[in-house]
Length: 195
Image 1: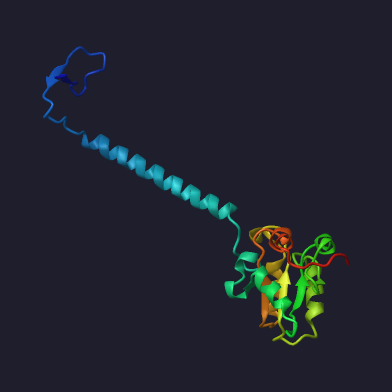
Image 2: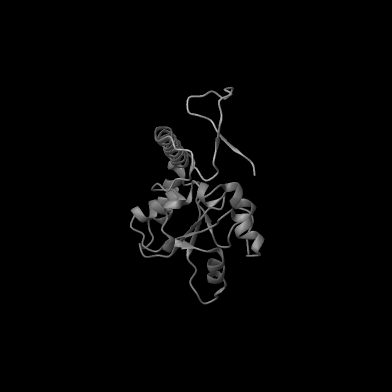
């Protein structure tokens, strides 16, 4: 049976003073050293937690008013839903406004949609206000962009907020998780080109 050796407290590792220890005996715990270790561990965990929270707040997509993430879920329309709606021949289609870049619009856009321009700019928001000025406040309007992933889109949030601030009550935003190409075109939904 192997012999367990106990080093007396205060002895250095190079010390030759050793005394045998019975395997059933336990070495007394140094309470002060143990509590200090726990405190250091707690402080480290707290520091890491605070650091992670700060980093997440700094680099996470914003849900501030006017961002795509601030749009309530009940105001989002899935691409399949809009496609189905546009397939109904007897149904009055909504006014569909593309609030992204002209390059994207000219390459491909939803049939019947109208180009407004980037509503991340004051000029784009003014074009949007001018386009809807004569419309009834309960009119069905669908906004879309599709320039980039939803959480990074600079256009749909300001456009939605602008219409809501103007009193429009039936505004939906086409939710495109990735972009127009992946979430509309690649699914085989109809498109128009040009303009």
